[in-house]
Image 1 (tube, rainbow, N blue to C red):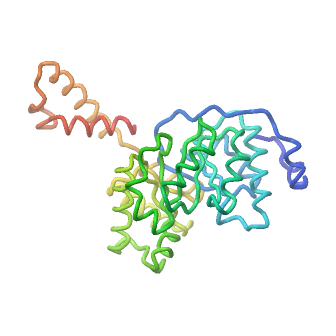
Image 2: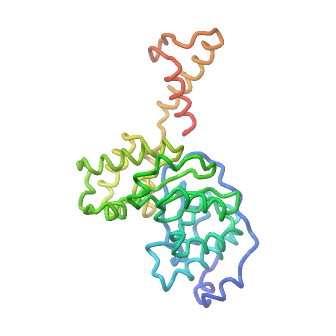
Image 3: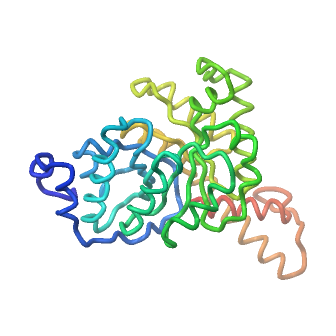
Length: 306
C-alpha cells in the first residue's frame, strides 16, 4: 500500500489534494512480459492505494469514459497525489487520458512531472495526433493509444516509425459504434469480430506495436473470459485488458509462455547458432526436425516474450 491510512485523503477537498504531493518518482518498469492490463478507476482511492503491489503486469489509471465530466479534475488530482508518493510498483503504470481535444493535452502536460511508464490517449484518429503526443509527453514515457475509431482502424498499419509509440489497445465496443455496427456482434463465433481482431493484430505488428485485446465487460462470467483469452492467444495476442483481479489471474495464466515452448525455443537457438558458425543454416535436428533461419527467428521471438 502507498498510504497506511487513506481516510484523511478522502476527507480533503479536491483542490487541497495537491498540497500534499510527495517527491517520489517511481523507477521505470523493466520487465518485458505483458499478459494482463487492468483498468482502475482513480476515484476509488482504495484501488489507487494498491498500485504498488497488484498482480497485473500493466495497470491503467482511467481518466476517460468511466469518469463523469464533473469529476475528471478529482480523478486527475488523485492520480497525481498517489503517483507522487509511489516509490515502486510491480506493474507497468499507464495513465489513460481523454482525447487530445477534450482535455488530453492539458492532462498530459499536468502529469509529465510524475512517475509513471506510459500515457494512453483515447480515440486517436490520425498519426499526426501521435506525433503531437510525442512532443507533449516527457521523454522517458511510452506512448500508447486506444484504438476506438474507424479512422484509426483503417490506418493503424501506417502509424509506425515513432520510436516510443509501442502499444495499441482495441476498444471493441467504441470501435463497433464508430463503424456503425451493433455491439451484439461480440461473440466467439462471429466472423466480423474475427476479422476486426485479426486486422488489428496484423496491422499493429506491421507498425511495430504490441496489440492489447479488448476488455470483456461481463466480469463474473469467468468461463467466457477464459474462452476469449484462449481464443485470442491462438490468434497471436499476448496481452488482454482486464476489469479486476479475477480476470488478471486468468489472463496471466493463459498468456504465460509455457515451459515446454521455452525449452524448445532455447534448444533451437543453441543448435542453430552452433550450426551457423559452421556456415550451415539449414539442418535436421533429432528433437524438432528441420531447423532453418525462419524457425530460429521464431524461437528468438518466444524467448523475448518469456
